[in-house]
Image (cartoon, rainbow, N blue to C red; front, side, top):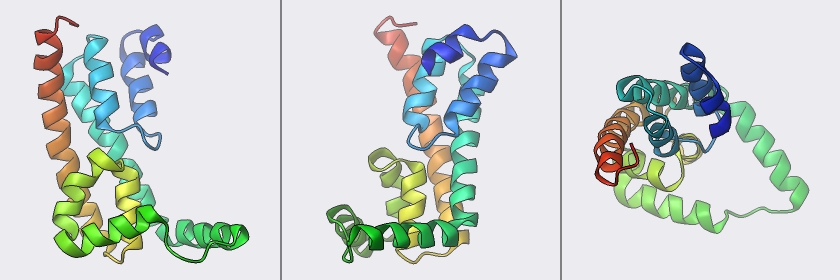
Length: 158
């Protein structure tokens, strides 16, 4: 996928990066350093990574019921009725710290889209999940942009 962005020129490079940022599990932790290494504008890369990830949070929030029904049918077919180890750990963390801390920390552990889906599965409202994941994405996007620019300059990658 990085080659796809590398081969594009001008505005198409930014469009390619945006399309990649829409993919699940490719969060700001991957998109921003790639854009900075490719010598794209760090501010534009940060905004693009945030936008792509936030759109996926919105998609998961809007289509949560359909995703949940699909997930339940899939689990029933496999014969799994109880929560998985990951779900048990997420619920424990959720009960201990709540949505604000969960949304700030989980993108680095689960990914933004899975964190949003997990928060919805654990019973939080769509509005609160969208708000807190948006705040979390803004913070992580800024941190990753600044960290990528200065960190990659420090190790002479750019």
